Amino acid sequence: MLYSTTTPAAKRAAFRERLRSGELLQLPGAFNPLAARLIQDKGFDGVYVSGAVVAADLGLPDVGLTTLTEVATRAGQIARMTDLPTLVDADTGFGEAMNMARTVQTLEDAGVAGLHVEDQVNPKRCGHLDGKQVVDEPTALQRVRAAVAARRDENLLVMARTDVRAVAGLATAVDRAKALVDAGADAIFPEAMRDLAEFEAVASAVDVPVLANMTEFGKSELFTTTQIADAGVALVIYPVSLLRLAMGAAERGLDALRAEGSLTGQVEHMQTRARLYELLDYGAYSAFDTGVFDFSLDDNLHG
Image 1 (spheres, rainbow, N blue to C red):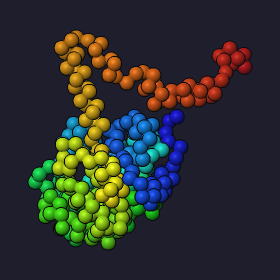
Image 2 (spheres, one colour; image 1 turned 60 degrees about the vertical axis):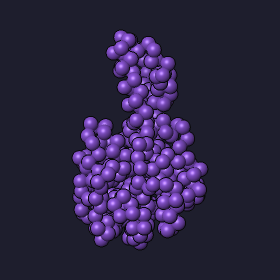
Image 3 (cartoon, rainbow, N blue to C red; image 1 turned 135 degrees about the vertical axis):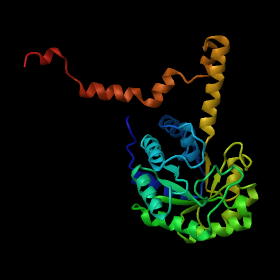
Image 4 (cartoon, rainbow, N blue to C red; image 1 turned 90 degrees about the horizontal axis):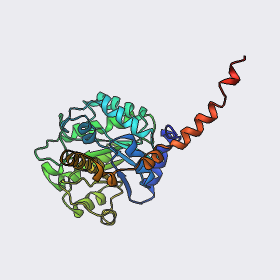
């Protein structure tokens, strides 16, 4: 009922422990808190909050228009609704080194278990679009060092994302990944890898967990969990998948309503009221309400 009873500190410690297990962890992207509850209910390992999804939810493109406040607010709303660890996209840190430090502490206060910072220039763009630009290596390393120095909980996972593969090739991406680890990154997110061999090259070059981004319509093929695990990858995210599924269903429903004048034919595709109430834990709220308000009005009229 209400929010998760697992503390952010406990979620962070558990996330670190799971990463040491060697299992592949799957983190679907949640576009709202209810989606996070569903991800937990289906038995996944964590929840991802995509910067692109936060932007899209606001009706904006993923070109660096969202603010720290908007991202932290949505991340906090999602993190508090699930016992799972939440990993959030912190873009470029919303500024330079001091901004990065504030970003880390703000997201830490929001209750996330980890965040990733990237080496694109400001304003950034979606990692699977052409025409990206990256900062030089000293600037990229400074961002990571600032993030690591700013955290107050040592279990908060600071992941470094590098977009340099699309700009300068795989060899440069591998070298930058190594440098980012040396700068203190707890994990590496090599964006827009072309194939499994590229993921394997990064994973074999560093001694920290590596993340694979399985976003649809991107540069990477949609590999299976077995293929990803065999390449040495430790985490996989599906950042926009649930939003795309939901918006696709919404569009089909609206088309049907316009064409048919009713949603009768769409009801079978909808989540039922019973299932929604189950996810929202209506029963627990009812029991709580009964336990607190256990008096009758008549009993209190004669005092």
